[in-house]
Figure 1 (cartoon, rainbow, N blue to C red):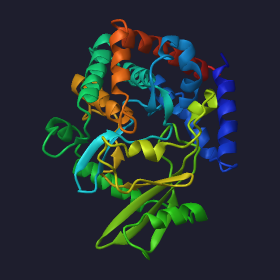
Figure 2: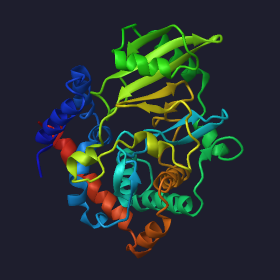
Figure 3: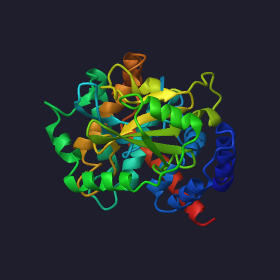
Length: 354
C-alpha cells in the first residue's frame, strides 16, 4: 500500500486539479496539523485514504449491495437544520463524498469512528456495533426522517442550542472580516438569500476537517430585523472515484441529501461546483462534547437509523441489503471495524512520525 505521505501528496495534487488550482494552501497546512491531533481527527481529514485502502483491509465488504452512500460518515457528520415547515430535524448533514459503493462500508466507517472516540468510556466494540446495526435494521424496516418535534424528545434535549452557544455563534459571525468573494461564490450566495437585492457582506471561512483546502465563503445580510447567513463551499468529485474505477462520475451531494426519507433543508442547493447552505445556531454540525454523548447506545442507534434513511432514499434496495445482512456471520461489523481502526491508527502514527 502507498505510504500515507505519498497518498496525501497524490490526493492534494488531484484536488488541485479538481479545483482548477484554487486550492487554499493555508487550510491544507491546517488540515495537516489536525491530522496529528488524534486518530479520530485523522480519520475525518483523510477520506481519500479510507477510499483507497478499505477494501484491502476489509475485503469481505466488497460484495455487499451497492447504494448511494455517504462515504465520509462518522459520529460528527450529524447535525440539525430547519425544514420547510420550520421543524427542527437531525441527521447526516454532509454529503461531500457521496458515491455509489457497498452499503456496508458506511456501517463500518461509522463504527470505526465510534471506536476511535470511545476513550475510557465502558462500552465494548461489540456493543457499539450492535447499537449501530440495531438502528440500521430499524431504519430499513421503517425509514422516516428524524424530526425533533413530537417525537425524539431525548435527542432534542441533547442537541438543543444553549444561549451561551447561540451568542458565541453570532459573535463569531459578527467578527468575520469582510472580503470580496470570487464572482461565482458571490453569485451563488446572493441567489441563496431569502430576498433579492439585499446588501450582503462576504468573508472567507475556515471550517470542517475533511473539506479543508477547498474555498469556503459566507455571506451575511440583514433581513426583516435580524441577520441571515449563508455558506458556499467548493465541491468536487468524491475521492471514492479517485481510488476506484467507477462508471458513475456525477457529483451526488445534493441528490442524496434530498432523498425521500429526509426532511429536506430548503436552503441547501448546488450551483455547479458550489454547494450552498444556511448557517444558524440550529443549522449546524454537532461536535462531540460533554453535553452530546455521541457513543451512547441511543445515539448510535439513531445514527444507524438515519444512515438507513440515506441508503434507501433514492433507490429502494432494502430487500438486497437485508438479505446480505442476514447471511453475514455474527460479529462481522465489530470485527471489520477493529481491522479498519487498526489500519487508521497505523496511518495516524506514521503521519505523526513523518
